[in-house]
Image (cartoon, rainbow, N blue to C red; front, side, top):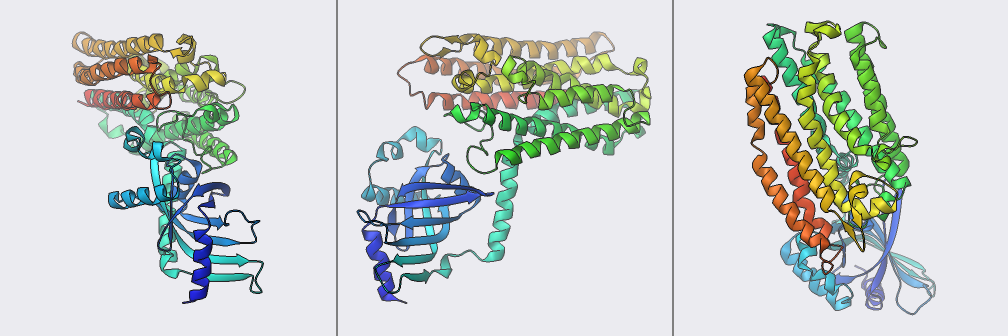
Length: 505
């Protein structure tokens, strides 16, 4: 152990309280100046978990830090390579809290904020050096190194960990958890198709391969929508202006956090839409014998591509012209439900439209189309100021009343009315099942989520009072709507599952 080098390093650390921290993910470098405290060889610092550097550390713990003493011209200092991790242990958090305060109390207000702590905004991080380079241009030996191999993760373990983090990153980039919007619609169309095949005594004609292909093509269409939305909301600055993003609004934030380049997000969208087209054309060939055969699959596919890529993409930009909500309802309602139903009931109709049970599929698609629209609708509440500033004329922006603040009573009233309309549609399906050959009496099962609807309305009303209270912290109020966002997604997916079950039985 080089005790002289250790002392030189310690002397630098004693004369400094800030370091320049460089992070990088996917060739997207970032840098930030942070206060630090010592804990043995480790360096401790505070930052907000949604910050760019914290987001990058989450996906790539390898960092570089530069430390120069105060009041000198940068001829003597440290360059540190290491691995950085968020501190999760509660006892370690308390220790980090005290260490940071010994260096600076600049962030104490935020570090003590119960709301920020409860919502995992406050973060403490530990940098474990693997190599420390001592730089001194006054000395004959201008560079000296200290290695700490015990702090370095073994290569194979790091490779495995990074692979998992990359997978998690792309799950986030394509917003995979929100694929429930596609699954619900395809499940309903498939359940309805199974019921029709069963009624025609053609159960053996069911094709799991075709079902999975339909599900894949529809999922790729949603991924294309999600990623193109991220890209074009970035180019319009809608997501950059948004200072209160959450998992439900403001996009995936992979561009803003420096996790994936804007160009890569756009390419992902293009590849996804190409995948959708290939799947659709293959299905069309299987049904008609021609890749571009004249079938509802072809025309619904064309409409789906336009709605998917045109949601925020130039020159159509449905979401910016007040047509986004309609596009979402149409795409994730009738187009997906009816498209899946048409493909999977081909053994019955043989591409003869007069033999396709399209009315049943259309009726079944309406409630789920309205409910998926409401997911986007309620998510736009937090985005209202940034959407308005970016010229994104959603119906929430259009119906909000602008005075000193955006008043959202009318958008909330419309949200409730559409929600009620969706459940009226479910009841209609049940009634039709009792008295006609359409619908299914078991659809009344899908009314069970009404209890969640009641809770959602109550929470939304309480939130509206906070939103309109000028004494509330405008940076915090948007996050208090998150439970309503969650419940709206839950209502949609649960209705989708229950309607599917209703048609299956």
